[in-house]
Amino acid sequence: MAQAKKAVSKQAKKQARAAAPRTTVETYHNYIGGEWVASASGEHFENINPADTRDVVGRFALSTVEDVARAVAAAQAAADGWKRLPAPRRAELLFRLGDILIRNKDAYAAAMTREMGKVLKETGGDVQEAIDCTFFTAGEGRRLHGFTTPAEMPDKFAMCVRQPVGLCGLITPWNFPMAIPSWKLIPALVCGNTVVIKPAEDTPLSTINLVKACEEAGIPKGVVNVVTGYGETAGRALVEHRNVRLISFTGSTETGRVIAASCADRNAICSLEMGGKNVIIVMDDADIDNAIEGTIWGAFGTSGQRCTASSRVVVHKKVYKKFTQSLVERARALRVGDGSDAQTDVGPVINAAAAHKIMGYIEIGQREDGATLACGGNRLAKGAHARGYFIEPTVFTNVAPDMRIAQEEIFGPVTAVIPTNSLEEAVEIANGVRYGLSAAIYTQDVNRAFRAMNDMYTGIFYVNSSTIGAEVHLPFGGTKATGNGHREAGTQVLDIFTEWKSIYVDYSGKLQRAQIDEVNFE
Ligand code: UN1
Image 1: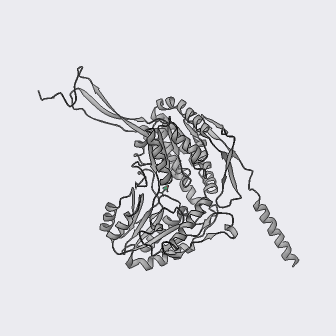
Image 2: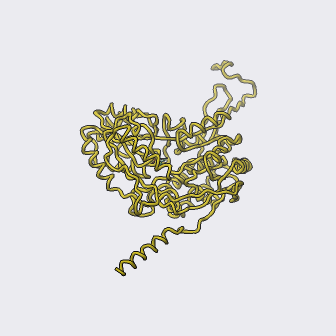
Image 3: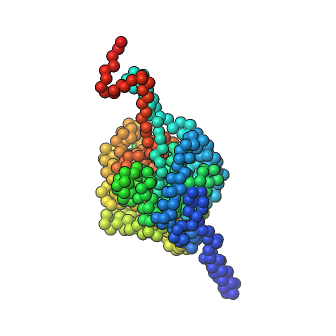
């Protein structure tokens, strides 16, 4: 008995120790004009670990309109010098940045798991995506190709060159807190623009780490600026600032629409990456085991919090039973927990509001929609899960294509399995949502693969692979409510961060009138 009591009190002590803050909480400032400065408000907000809400990752500047104005002024002051530095020289600094990112990859990944929640393997992948983006895009410093073309008059030369757009405001999401800022930052810089970044309030540390690396790489003061804070204040101030020429935003379709309207008001360029309701089509001839692996990874990787997440699976009736049974079995076996634990498959969701929204959709799926909840569906709140935002991997079956859980972006570990009779019907269901980011088909039949590849109206398409896992040298983006026609990554991103200038050089020594003067063979 005494022994047991002692054991209990030891346990209690251990718990009390665990309840105490893990470290002293660090305070982070804005980066403006090459200086780390407190916000004009003098106030901060806390960045909380979603796996353990006792753990405060840091205190970050709660930025105001005034901070944004200062950052914009700093970016403006640096613009001319940066633009005039030849692109290959700008790229050299970016290659140096790439080396710094490689050196710190593990530390950045650990910090990212702590602030964002996804498992270490995935945060390592996030940092790697930033590294890949940096090296690939820095290579453009020695290309940034324009073109020459014949002129319609003799003794006249025609060419087209890229010019920087000017000052860019980058508003970035929490789900890829280093990769997505890099998709915007690196091309903006190589193209000769200066920037102000407003990272998501849930994950400012990863962006600050990226910017510290820019500082270490020797990117001149004022070229890169960061203001942390909330969308309604700092984000809005950036979007509405009349000296910001371009806003690049990744986030919800609803916010994107507000940003687009605001940019339209003052004729600013606006590039948007928004929601998805991505689909995997599984045909009756598919390698089912492979399709299951792809679905598990696409639906539950990053706890389903990717724009590219596989939130719908359209499965041929001939293999429907086998597929769903095995999917449910695999989903049940996933270990949900702290992303810093090597045993964890699925980390927490980002915050309380997200958990609430996801649980709301799970309820809608059961009540309003009437689909079958085949596994999961619960918020985990006991034991190791008591202090985080953990939700069980959830599979709905017998879902009809028009149900809300099959139409709306849930952004959580929830997927909807929809039965189908044919490829034609599957494609129609797959296209029957407002979004158009990513789609996939599992089939062994090359004709079916090409048919779906041709008929799916999405920005990304996979054959025998999941809907997630885009690579940085191919364009990334989507159709319909996913975007507004732009593509990030690849070389296509250069079309966002540069504007074309068509140049005509007439060396005839006289007036030649295009469309009017006749030019004949002599
Ligand atoms: C996102 O979900 O917002 O293709 C980005 C992927 C990652 C990027 C996802 N490379 O899943």
